[in-house]
Length: 358
Image: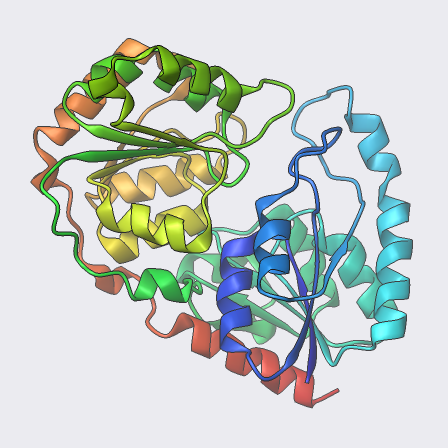
């Protein structure tokens, strides 16, 4: 079967690609991390590294605030529509699968015009704007949480759960005794989190190892600045501080395995993996919009972590909170049955069933 996967949210997409081995998979996604920059996206690097054909889509996004990229971004939507239409016209897949995000809209509209069956997957506790729009054109809507059901036409909805990458499912319990803090802003990095960590990194390193994933923003150059900072540290502190722009799938799984505490954003795929691994976390959700705040509050409610407001946070407060959590880390535990088991297999079955009806 020929299947088109629409990127934007690469974690569940990669999990599904692993499950769909034996089928022909084509990936449409975002080649660059940020608009107006030339840093290659992590999804592009990961997908091409496993030999999946990757077709970059240039399209516009609905931005939460007006920037210099807003108008050029909106003008790109027709470009994405034309690109998508001709890719689908010549590839003629049996089914198109979207995982939310602005990339999927021109592809789904093109597939609908060409009468190619479409399925979307919603990872969040609610419903993303792109998936709400796309729901009018699709055959099936797979959801990760029961709380999403009310946002979609009930006759299309299937509760499958959120696919988790195989490497995370196979993680073993760590054996090391030294405390390790993993600081991350997600695949794109987060400038604010990088700045906050920069202001307290020397204090953190006195009692812990730190693995810091910065992203590769060409606007802020966080990686380069933090690498310079690392080079000024004493030898004893320097060896305890690891800085990476990105982490490979294998490296990320290993870091999650060994981390005592994860500090980062509150994207739904991140919190799904944290819940699966019972991993204590300090979450700093994006200030704009409510989705990440809702995710972070959910993690706090189930006892797995704490939440800090980015707009009220300083390096001193961040250090104090991390120190407090590390001193009482056994408090942050949750039962793993909150996640739907075999979500990847369930979603793959729905995809294949929709494709067979082409």
